[in-house]
Amino acid sequence: MRRPWLLWLLSLALAQAPKPLQVGALQGEALYPGGSGVSYGEARLVAQGLGLSLWQGEGAVALGLGSRQRTFPIVKEEARAAQTGAAWQRGDKVYVPLRPLAEALGLEYRAEVGVRLTLPWARLLQVERAPDRLRLRFSREVNAVVQAGGVLFPLAQGEEPG
Figure 1 (tube, rainbow, N blue to C red):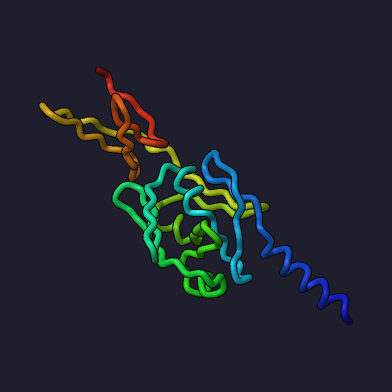
Figure 2: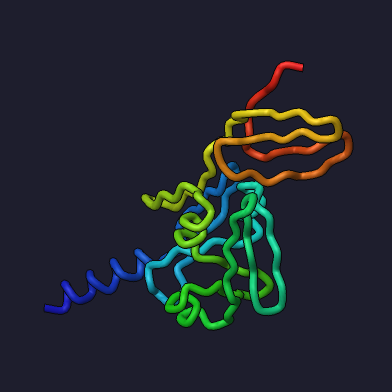
């Protein structure tokens, strides 16, 4: 009689244990605050792994891709974070719910043995030239990173003659 109850508790505990998280080429841990089954990943790791923009203020964190962005209020209580879909502050790190973030920004989310979050490559579709600018059109939203000597478009591919 006690054995099924014990097995159920053990399976619940294992389901909520941290799992491997792969974000682009980076590795981390997916956490499950409040035992809710909602996977969370560290906001900074997610932004770095996928080339997303990241803004963190005192009470909120936002991640963005091109014109899309998702803002989460930050709470310190893990159960409240999981119940409300808020970001969760654990020490000096902030964790965001991965599936809602993926849905908002068009990311690919897969949960099997661990959690994998990816961003499909953006293909360059069109280049329009003007005297003092170029207009680039991609197959999805992209972020632009200004660097010495030019502009970098993370996870974008394509070329234009000339």
